[in-house]
Structure formats: structure tokens, C-alpha cells
Image (cartoon, rainbow, N blue to C red; front, side, top):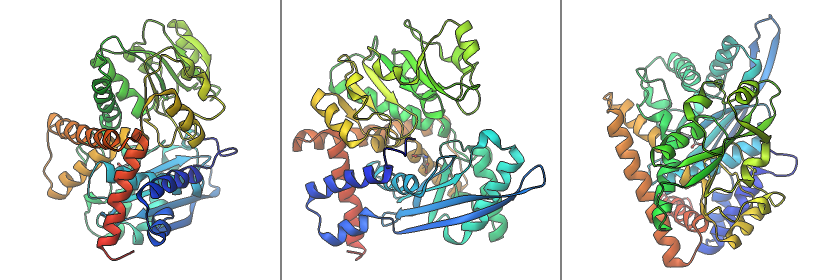
Length: 428
Ligand code: GLU
């Protein structure tokens, strides 16, 4: 997250303005869709393990709920700002629209670093978050989920506090719950698999056999790990992964020219996706600077970490061999870099299409939780494949028939769907 130079919300608004121009939207619709419908800022006082009190800042932004309850994750991050949450909630509303699921867009966050918090302190933050926002969220209004540095356990703590306040069980209030506690099988795989389903479809469009293709990935968290798993099942080779070192908390690229072994890399990774560099060296990984993942001679790049990673400063370093960029992260490419990628003729699978698998599976989880009947993992992943493939094909067909790139096509489809829902409700 590079907030010194880039503001994610400005990026999100610039992208929206472009789509609004293409769609020739009227001023009222622009005003409504450009800014959040509602946002909540609150303080979460916590008694720390050493007995002292500390106050954490929390947010929830409901960007739009015309198509259904606001939907989106809660991030724990030391550099969280209201603008990153605003941007991410805006991207969520395009994501649910492009995936064509009956949900809106929201996002939440707490400024904190879970690396430095005990589990008890994290539990207190989750329960405090739920207490501050419980009046304004719920299965029919706003449904949170895990995101950067939050997981199924955090979701269960939030749900437990919420249900205690409400005095009733309401498992559809939150998604990404543990399996067996209302969670869906396939949820942990869904975002990463979804990214690679869209890559598989892009390779078909480009007439490239996935076997023998190579990739370089930024990030080694939940999205990247499962994206790598499916990519390898498709026959691809991952040459380079960039992520944090557990010890000095700096980003490095870990490379193996002949392809990384996922199990081997997982064995030296912590629960936040940080790698043990010393062990990586022992296992024969080449350790390169954090940015090196971007410069590799590979067919596919997958930024699956944070926003603003491909910028005007580094975009020219991308190899001419790269044919596809699949944005696993939210907002990894700045608008300036995007223009350069477009000129280079790289096939971009935009973030809110590429990583829509997570929220699509969250929707399946909500459906299962509400009817209290759970599907098998194969059923879930089968439905995920159908949804993601349909979303990809719709965007690709629209791009071809309107002579647009994939990002513009995805934006026009999504903005049009949300604008139409607002019009139908009489909001604009
Ligand atoms: N945090 C994920 C995303 O950015 C999933 C959100 C959700 O499931 O609601 O798409």
C-alpha cells in the first residue's frame, strides 16, 4: 500500500469517471455512484494483555446497496485509511455487479497490525468492531467477510458478538466463517481459483495452451496460494513469488527458474503469507528484490498483494514475453500504468473480474447459511466455475463487440448494472 504517492480512492474515482463518460451517465447518477452512500468511523477501545488501554480506529463503508446488501471484507492493516476503504468498497460494488450476484459493495477496516497483537487482543478488536457497527450491518443490509490479514476465526468472533447483541442466530450476516460453523467448503480456495479460471479463459481467447505457460506472482497469501495450486493443475509453471520475509518484514522475490514447488514453499510460510528467507535459501531459492517478480520473462503476471503495485515508475520493466496480467489484488495497477499496458497489448483481466471468485463463493455461503443446508466442495467449486466463466465471457464478448479493452468493458457492464438498479429504485 503506497499511500504517499497514490490514493486508491482517487484511482477508483478516475476509473469510474471513464466508465461514466463511456456510458454518458447523467450528473445525478455520477454523483450517486462516485461516492459512498454511507460511511461509519468509530473508535474501538481495547484492554491490552499488559493491562493498558489502547484505542483502535475502525471503519465501515457502504458504497452502494441498490442491487442487494452491501458486501465486502474487513481488513486489518497498519496503513489502513478511510480512502483505501472507500476505494475498496467501490470496487466491491463493481465486483458483485460483474459477477452478477444480488449484492452491493462495502468494505471495512481497522488500523492495526495483527503481527503485533495476541489472539486475545485480536478477538477483542473483532468483538469491539461488531459492537460499534451492529446497528448498521446485518444479513439484509451489510454482510462482511475476511480480507487482508483477517480470517475465518475473526469472522466467527464478529458473528458471535453480533448474535449476542441481537439475541438471535443470524449466520447469513457474515461470510468466510469456518467450515462446520456456517462456512462454505471451497471458500478458502475460491478467490485464487477464480483468478485462474479467468486466466484459463483468457488463454483460450489468445489460443495458448496452458501447459508450458509460466507465471510470476506477487503475494503469497490466500489468493496467491490457491491461484498457484490451480495454475499448476492446469499444467503451468510458477517461476517467481514475491512476498514478505518473516524476519525483516521486507518484501523479496523468491525465484526458481525451473518452477517453485508449492508444498515446499508453504512449509516455510507463516499464517500471514510471510516466508522464512533463511530456509528459502537453504531450499535453493534465488532471493531477489521485492519488485523483481514484475521483471520476469514469463507469460502471465499475477499481482495478488495490495493496491498500487504496477505504477508509471515500474511498468516499463515488464517483459515483452508477458501476455496476460490477472489482477488478483484489488487495485494493483494505477491508471497511468494501465495506459502503458494497454499500448503494450497485454491482455488485462481487471481486478474486480479476476478476483470475484471470493465474493461469489461468499454469496454461495450466504445462500447455504440461510437455508441451513450445505453443498459438497465439488458442488461449490462447480458453481464457482460456471459463474466466473460466464462473467469472463460476458466481459470479453462486450469488449470485442464494442472495441474496448477488458477493464473498460468490465466497468461499463458493472456501472450500467448498478446505475440501472439505482434508476429502477427511483434514486436517480
Ligand atoms: N475480501 C474479498 C474481496 O475483496 C471477499 C469479499 C466478500 O466475500 O465479501 O473480494
